[in-house]
Amino acid sequence: MTTVFVGTYTQRLGHVNGRGTGVYVYSFHEGSLRQESAFRGLPSPSYLAVDAARRRLYATSETTEFDGSPQGALQAWGWDASPKTLEPLGQIGTKGGAPCYVSINKDHLLTANYVGGSITSVKLTGHGGIEQIAGHVQHTGSGPNPARQKAPHPHAIVPDPTGSYCLVPDLGTDHVYVYRTDHGNLEIFGEPVNIHPGAGPRHLVFHPSGKFVYLLNELDSSITTLFWEDGRLDAVSTMDALPEEYAGVRSGADIHVHPTGRFLYASLRGPGNIVCAEIAEDGYLSNPAWFPTHGTTPRNFALDPAGKYLIVGNQDSDTLMVFHIDQETGHLVGPRQVVHVPSPACIKIMP
Image 1 (tube, rainbow, N blue to C red):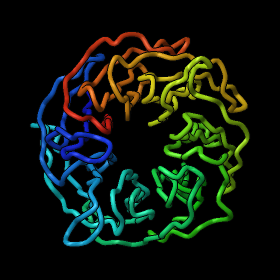
Image 2: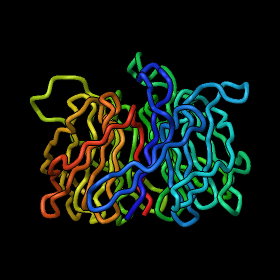
Image 3: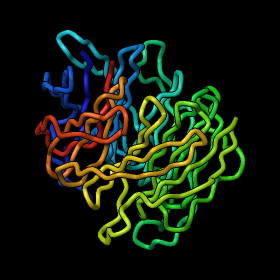
């Protein structure tokens, strides 16, 4: 039995008519979701991070005003598995507007502020509660897309497997930045990696080997493969994540690697698909296949720790879809279950 947390949009924003309550809690067993509870907190908890060891849940509040300042916020909860309750453990402003991503790196939270164009680190207490701001870096620059790239827009901040570095894809500047992380300090490391103009870097994921990084570019729905070694990041190839015949809106959202390291998945909001590609031993991608999510605007998704199931949230059709994963091909089978939840934005699984 595992637990699934779903963050939702609770407000009307420029890109979504948020109708959610807050964070929804589900039990998940043998491919079946069952709602247990829902919790209100800060508005629009649109991205979540789970600390399974300390039983903590963290959420961004994707707003542009908090505590009288132009910033978003973070909230922390303690998680009690029985009777599946969340206890608030504090909240703090992020020093930047619309935080859209949060990750955990040792005893700090790392946050990307999309509208604020900055990244922030937050010190945690020994019990996993929020303590104080430890670091903040403002990005600068722009890109060629006048509608989306007039300013920097960090869209994720992902620690490397060692916790010594973090990678920050910036949709507004077409760069991926490498930072050293030391006691919450965020120090730029080397020159940023240039991604092709107008790509709009959004989310990235490390391969289980730690040698490869896969970057999903939002604005053209491409996937860039990068090689990673001790702080050095090199872009080596880019694949169009959409079928050759597709002529509609391009809008990539989320990306994950199967626990076996054999398959890569990415959600594509334009056609309402998830693409699955094979990963070769040398890290390169091939043989993409596409699977409809049977909903509108598939945003975030998650794979269970065993790699047997994939759960995707269709943001604008208010559904979670549970798919079975064929272990030989990586292909999605189903959906085997459809669950209603308003404006799902992020899905995280706690073992």
